[in-house]
Image (cartoon, rainbow, N blue to C red; front, side, top):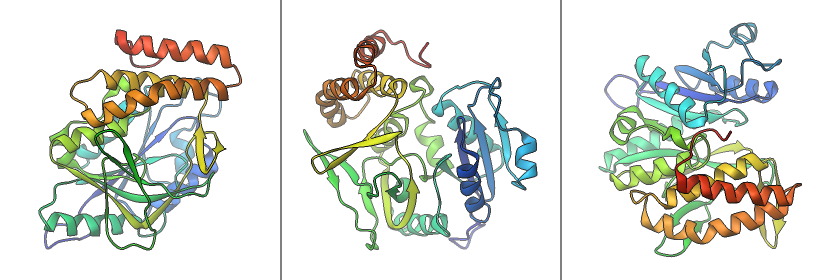
Length: 310
């Protein structure tokens, strides 16, 4: 779609993963994507028994030309993304760009990402993922670039007026643009994680293979993280439901035990896991049950009980 060189134009495929989507927010996203990408692949994790689930007819009635696939059950974001990647490859896409159902993309964002990607590639930099700066719709705060030191995590403020790409150890999945050839070289998403840490694990894995990830400050995308947030001092911390907290803790524990994951990340997460358990238990409506469930998450990780929680 975007001609960034003398060769054939890049063909861009957007992968949108759904789970009980808010139809108005989904319309907002799809309308913004129509003129930005060549093909939209919608992978729906909403169970087929859901009364208000979407159908091919809904997309046709809304005049959205998408490739829609209902998985019939919640197979997790990683598997849904991998299905979308395979569809994009089958349709000869050169890049994929991932989106959550509640994201909002500004005009020309993808063109900006492609332009900066080409500038970096022309400098012989192996670009992994390249993505926008996030503005959290709940907190009103911009996201930070994450870079790990030996013991501490450096959270780097990103100036939305800056013209220079900002290096990060990994990017949030939604809005991130990745070349298909990069995904083929690094491997796809780890489906056993189901949800949470999927994008981070892939980003760290790509780093080990020499790929670098970049935030483009002037490409700003609105995004909503979590169900709510609390303010502690000067920090605003996003809250999730108890099931999401289970996946966060379980997968963090599991990746902590994986020797192939970046050691600096594992050192840092080892200190955070007890804090997650305490914080999520205290902020839950069912504190005791939440605490027990999070202990189970740690146990499941050590036993290798992954995938969808039963």
